[in-house]
Length: 157
Image (cartoon, rainbow, N blue to C red; front, side, top):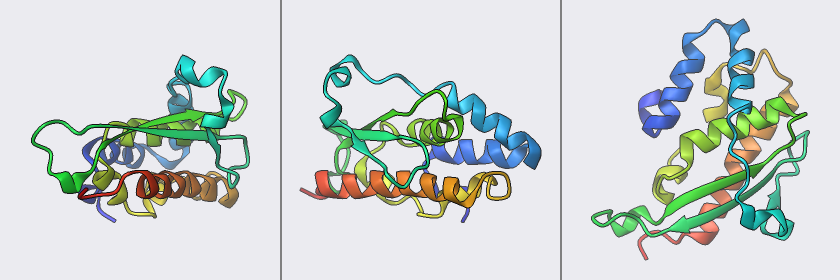
């Protein structure tokens, strides 16, 4: 996969991971874990609004919301997607993966998110540094986002 097939923000993140030596990538992931935004207040008393990604080793919950795309956006692009994640501070790898996806995908159109290759998590160069279960967890996060976008954002409508 080439980073030029990724949305700009996600491509930049992948390039950042690929630019550092392998042993420094975990530190970069930990830095991402510290920048995962807190859930908006409206989610605090409504856990039913979040969906658990059970494939993750640590508890991770996700929700998406949609907004009307800016004027001039082709209808086939679909709405703008907003992503919300909840992961415990004691799970920095999971939080880091969620933060990478948040920073790279939040605010994109449905079509842009659906075009992200399923193997994108492997491009971070972490497969030899974290367990296969954790890598499957990040792939599951991306898969869940795409599944929810497909279900909630009919394109071209």
